Image 1 (cartoon, one colour):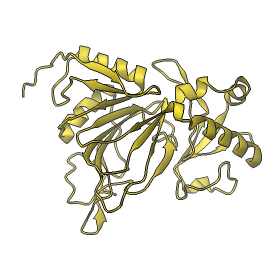
Image 2 (cartoon, one colour):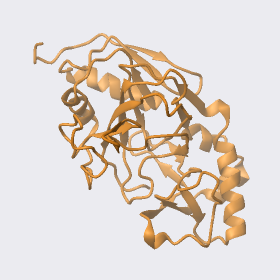
Image 3 (tube, helix red, strand yellow):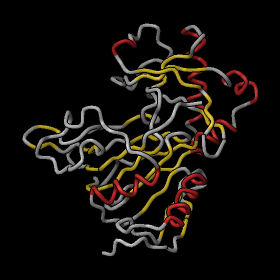
Image 4 (tube, one colour):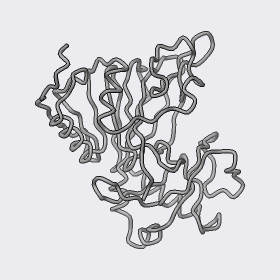
Length: 291
């Protein structure tokens, strides 16, 4: 394979009326030209989620492509969730999302079950900009990823509700032991969990568009509101956000590389059988302070 940068004729195919596009005609093993990368990033800004089908990627290929979008975030405890027999070569940058066990130990993280809508790392000061997920083993049913357009969620808010959330902040926390927990809970001890107050409405640094930035999985309370008022506001927002008109469902195939913009999307996972193996490889691009 030549290491020379290649100018590629790519095609952008929308995946749904909500968001998402498939990029056709690109082999991510190649060293892509600056013009091709610029086209891909432009498509990403327009469609928020990009899918590249039928890719055969090494870990190094995936890292090289992801680095076109910014510096990769280093993992704080890269070996904590990895079985030492794992094939990961760069654990400081790469995480396995898997339910596979070797010698009784998980080789990755986020192994089983469904997961509510969320944005990666919304509970830290500078959350992830982009997430890259590459499918290596996929169950026959389930384990789909749902993506949600938070630009549209904000733009379709009733004017009165938009006025209530503009300028406000909410507390996001890395705490999801229960999918049925309440919101705006006064009894949550945040000192035991990573958390950060983020604007409920954020402005994308590249497109300058506004997007909602709360989610059912990790947003717990609204600053300046008591439990009753904050809970009512968040539940109203969650119900508005999670409308089908804003959602694209990605049904994974082996060889899919999917990347999404955490600044203007949410994602969720559907349940799947614990009798089948699921293995995906994940990289994250560092982010900036939310404004």
